[in-house]
Amino acid sequence: MSEPMRPSQPLYDALAPGYEEHFAVPHRRAYDDLAWERVRALLPPGAPVVDAGCGVGRWARRLLDLGHPVTGVEQAPGMVAELRRHPPGSGFTLVEGSMTEVTLPATAGAVLAMGSLQYTADPERTVRHLAGWLRPGGVLAVLVDSLVGLVLELVGAGRDDEAVDRLTRRRGVWRAEGHAADLHLLDRARLEAAFRAAGLVDVHSAGLLVSAASVGRAGLTARLATDRDALLALERRLGDDPVLADAGKQLLVTGRRVPG
Image 1 (cartoon, rainbow, N blue to C red):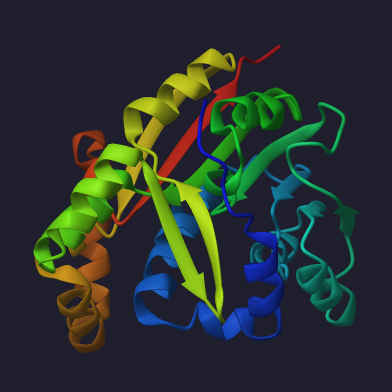
Image 2 (spheres, rainbow, N blue to C red; image 1 turned 60 degrees about the vertical axis):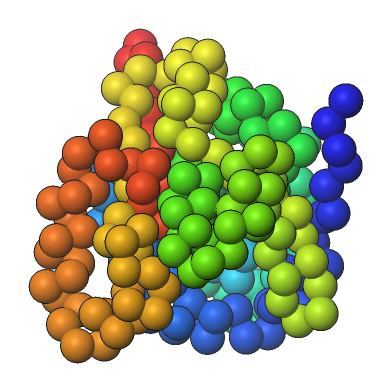
């Protein structure tokens, strides 16, 4: 029997008022931009998109700017309150509830779960659930913290016991604003297997911020400060090789429902 997980909702409620600023941190902005580049290239033009765990609508705004109608699924009351105070724009529909329980029709050209899947109790079941919202040919994209990337970062920082604990338990903890949320630490093999078990094809993994494994967070921040463009150009080349996916600080996995 798996150990229970502390829910992420209280933490996200606390973060909601300043969540946009949260992603102004250099390494978060870098992997967010890299993920957006890759996901944007896969979006069917003008197709409806579901943003599962949409938060305050950061990605929804980008999608709306490209002409995609967006359905945002969000359960944290603090995030929902921010969405109501600052709506992403015309073409956005909010569905309040858990991404693991909400029922949506199979009409989406793309379903995105950017940083949300890892907080669900059963990631494999959730992948199957999200894939069920896709129309034939539709794309599922999932972004998670990388198990291998975190373990390498912890070893590099001299936090050996924590690294072994994370590797053994496959669990992480995010602490912020006086709250703690447990999350699954996932790797390429597990996620790709979940995608294929959900009936998806053209499954591909990309590691985002692969260089963080060798230079650490401080070194990564320094390189982003001195020559962000050059580092992101390198990351694009490294991220194209699926063999390096697990070494990324973040792991982006995509797959497509079989065309009708």
